[in-house]
Image: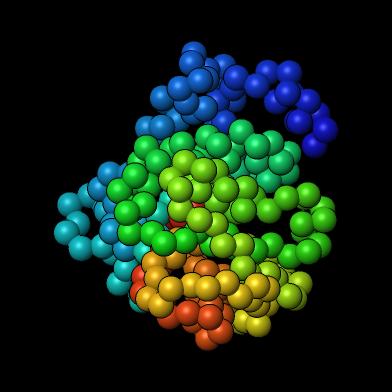
Length: 234
Ligand SMILES: [Zn+2]
Ligand SMILES: [Zn+2]
């Protein structure tokens, strides 16, 4: 890890995805080649996944009803994109959140921001926080807030250690996360708000659904919710 941090510090002007030297790091922290796979056009308005070629309705939404939730992610969770998110989480280097938030604004955040009332980062466990030293979701939420003016409400916490969702089978995920999230701070939300939850990866959505359930039960009626992430498991 130290080696990775040093490498980034010696050469800070590298693309956050592929690590090639950037021509103009002031303008963008991601190279144009890496932007080709951005999930911004021809995506389903609800689940954020790309429409299958020649399909008129989304094949994914039929598999999994999302209720109020809409998903937007920058990249598929694979290859260089997956490695980039892992480097961000394990090195804690702040330029990643800055670079990802730039891409979010460029692709769909500019349009979404008119609808959004608050940004709520998905919490990580205390143990993971101590190990990592930061919550990547809060880091990204702060960058987005800085660029859009939408406030961050860091109101949730993990009150129980759980297995990482990624190591659970699909059917185990909802039970694994149940009761693991609580409201740590009650702030005055307006009734019927639109929330954007922020996280690094979206897989089955069990965690964000649990966050919504807890907020609705204890704090506020949610009108609409988005989950905005860097990567999306396809
Ligand atoms: Zn690149
Ligand atoms: Zn869909």
